[in-house]
Image (cartoon, rainbow, N blue to C red):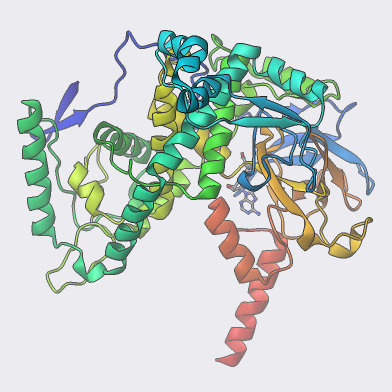
Length: 542
Ligand SMILES: C[S@@+](CC[C@H](N)C(=O)[O-])C[C@H]1O[C@@H](n2cnc3c(N)ncnc32)[C@H](O)[C@@H]1O
């Protein structure tokens, strides 16, 4: 346990892993993405695109020559994926083929679960078959049998080898089963406490004032120190006139890590059950962590840009069906954007005595500064996105622990490094698989609304497509492969855009949606044009 003294306050720095604990897999951390100004042209013979920086949008794909409508400008394969809860039995876990009526014939069961299923019906059989193995491994067998389904034996075998062989594949299914156990065991209890929490949050008038908050924090801290025999947390209080925009990303990042240390140390939010879409994201992360264990046990993130470029191009070639792990290191993490938005929403310390709660007097814009205590964190109104992240981590970490003898330690930094890269960068897997802009353009007569959302997946080499509400590129999925096809002619040097969602709504709805789901203010040409028209109309009315 480390402590640091700032302005006479002991600042608690927990969460540093003991060196004896093994951390496997890639060191994906919360560092900023590599800027890769040098990514440049990929391979013109293969794809007519380059990656360049563009003011206000970061990196983007640009045409390196004139492109005709209907040309494939890029192709990508996934690094990790998760099938939606609703269609687990109907969607092939490898090629994403969807069969809504009959499901798929090949079922791959979690073998660790077999023993516990037997245990429930026949303890003797359990002892003989699986119980001993589970005991030897030191892991608890799951009560839930997780079954992957496949449309063919070939898909089944390919998935197993992609995961690093039968043992690792079994480990992945065991992890999913353990998550399912956690969901079922804690589900109803957690739903009750979520409801109670919502109720409290609605009654914002019941928020404690600053002296109550301090008293609660001091009480909790003294309770914790008397339990552990040492003084563990001393929190300080920030200046009241603080503006979160004064913080640099690095300062904010430091503060976020400190908050996560407190959250994980005290198991805060461990009673928060993520909703079904968060649970799907958590499964995607589970898949990515298991796959990365198979893909690269010892490699760290220090791969050179040139090697990565070669890998990126190679992974887009037709014979690859899994993206290189290194590509994930280049994906932009959205953590600071999400948390900046949260801080603005946080109503933390009442600054006046008349009961009016103002936006937080929160973080002093200094070194590492305000270290909230568990009581402060629990009594603050964290944004739902923060609760969701902490709840997802807690769910995965509990399941992970049950299978941890194989998987190493899941630190919050490792989880966040993946979570905030995959959260707003994954693509939905839809059936029918064509990303069309107008329902009328569907050739098979299916309407856009009838498309089924069967899961989602991260295609880390394709995340450089920025969004436009009038995109010039459409996504066309062919099995696991995502093809990016121009839907109009594009001149050399122009940027290539896809759409991140429905483009048929009004400008304010589109922008709200992009802000809520993808954490950015859309600055596409169409939004700018339509919002200036809106402003003119408003002016006219006034
Ligand atoms: C999937 S990434 C696209 C690649 C990204 N530009 C990068 O450098 O990694 C999505 C991010 O790009 C930026 N972005 C994409 N489309 C945008 C748009 N229309 N207006 C403003 N920012 C956009 C936002 O920062 C968003 O969070």
